[in-house]
Length: 241
Image 1 (cartoon, helix red, strand yellow):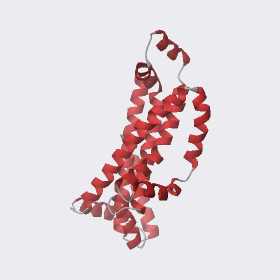
Image 2: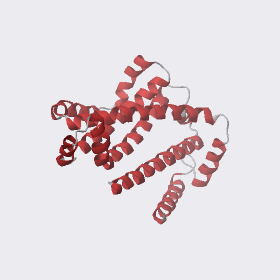
Image 3: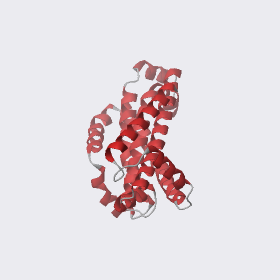
Image 4: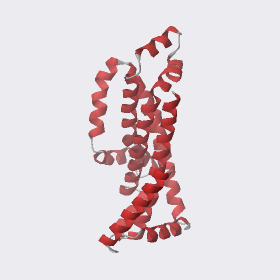
């Protein structure tokens, strides 16, 4: 807790120093941003945008996990499939996803489906790659023990693979969480009329520094808190195993 407080104080201090250096044209002080954010949260016009982003992000994250975990586990267990598909996943991970957005718009249209799809293509690959690496590093004796006990595929995954690979899987979930959020917001920024990404793009176009700073604070706070929570859970799971 002391380290977290010290980090927060240090960030606020750096923020204030940067504000003094840059000035009012392109920045706001911590107090001004917090005050504007409080007013934004009390506005009825803000909540529909927040709910739109929350719904798109939640669905995109759920799909990323539901696809990435089984895919990574399957490739981690199957050497032949891993040799074929792992290079493809790594290459896909390196592709700038923004180049795929016009194709997604043609496929899904100007709605929430395109935002969800854009979030999924950002988050599913790191989750799959981390899961693949985690399963591949499981000690062979654990797999042999499961086979000797006569465990089926689902029991093997639930009782052997998942507990042994959980710490590395949580590392992938942390990265997938952040990238899925980024993908969802980017989808809202380029082709949407609702959502936090849409508000942020409008604020940039209108040079509304107060709104830009407030949205950045909210998104950074949410992403940081979620990442910290996943880190704590992952460490506890790792200690338990």
